[in-house]
Image 1 (tube, one colour):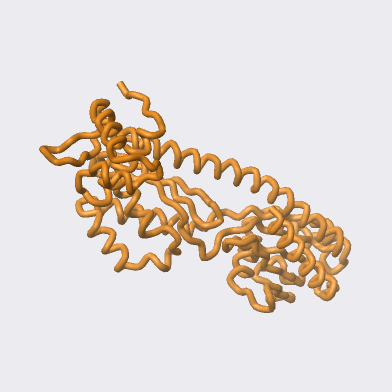
Image 2: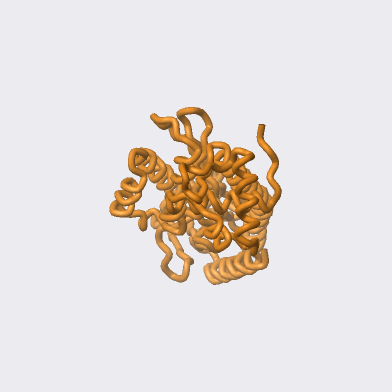
Length: 344
């Protein structure tokens, strides 16, 4: 039966485990007095350690004066750590959902406002992550031979991946792998995780080196994932205001392009890949990357919402569009988006 620990005992147990994980040596009361912020005397710590030993959370190997964690101690530590991390991830998810909902409304309004202001068709893509870095990684057991890797990347994007493993990992091993991976990989982009670093991690992981390979692959996939982008459109019917675009075939092709947003993804990728002219680009006629828009002019801009999150705003109209007005509208909207995000 698990016995409840008061805060003081819990802090001492955590300090013993962290110190033991770091050094592999039994931990004495003097080490703990330096290791915690409890400001307790060695005698008090010795009494607390005696209680923890009686409760079965720590052991005294041989005649050593120090203690090491028992399986029950590890279990309590891991459960509490996982609970804290799970809470952090859940809080983050809730915050992101709220923020995503606000952003969703904001981008819809942006597309609508631009369509009204310019009298052309407009599109705005939701931001995707570029050049992002790993913020945090958590491995936890799902089944005997399955691990869940929770990967949090820059922009606070969370990816969950199930890893099949050939071995049954102890809590201590799982804990050591979590510490090893986070210590070496946090804050790095996929380009910075080089072969030398992977080799060093595998060496440190010893017999568990295969898991390191799988985790690195999962991180690379999470960082580079090219998901279907959310694209908001407005003002499609404005196309009918311009005789050169309003014949039945041309207009229906253009409207289909706006409805099948996957085609617009090409325009987004092209814009994000080429950021000349201060983020604003103009495609005239056959320069357009989308075939159905080669009778039009397209003006696109890249907006950025911090932490490498970039998206595209596009205005599609006839070749005789009012370019000055369109570029001014885009600059104004980019500034507005920037200001709104800064205030969040």
